[in-house]
Length: 282
Image (cartoon, rainbow, N blue to C red; front, side):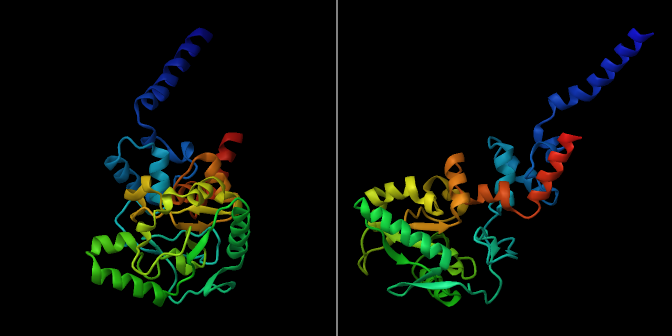
């Protein structure tokens, strides 16, 4: 009798296990396997995975959570926490109308940033200088109106596609947050575009790549992710996210902020991680 019960239990278990072995991870209970899975984006995960079948499903989820799975400015969400150092702002995450950061400080020569970011940059600049690296501030905080002017000027001189690869629309620029800074190794001439400065080939750029995270800065628009973030490669553009996040990205080899945000910071993810841990304990 006991042997018959055991056999029955084994057969029943096979009916549960075998379908899982032949079913893609994305089709199983995803939030059990991926703590950053948000059920409200289920259809977008499926759609993006179908367009990128070779991409790890974990990254698919992160990119969707970060708003880069769909064309820019096609599904705009207003940022609820614009004063958060780790806020996400991109072509589908926009600042509230009229937003201006409050804790701005003067860095000299007309440059301003939020206080924490400014202090960390000035320390980074000083430390780099002791090693012979010159970090020159080209652009920091821009108002909504400043960004609108640059965006409209680009539209007047380039195709819309090219203009939107070079400048974010007003309300979607990291510079408006007071957390972004453009850095070169020397002042550029008025006729010289940022891309002509060849900053990528300098010792300053190499130093930043290896050390900026220690001061809370990340390179925001790397070349290898151009088709994801939607901008040209900008070796000069650095974003302050705080030392903990910047260091975690560096240590984990995460090169795009949307991926980190989509894995750890998007609204609802923390609750998912708690639920997953509770399930494990149970």
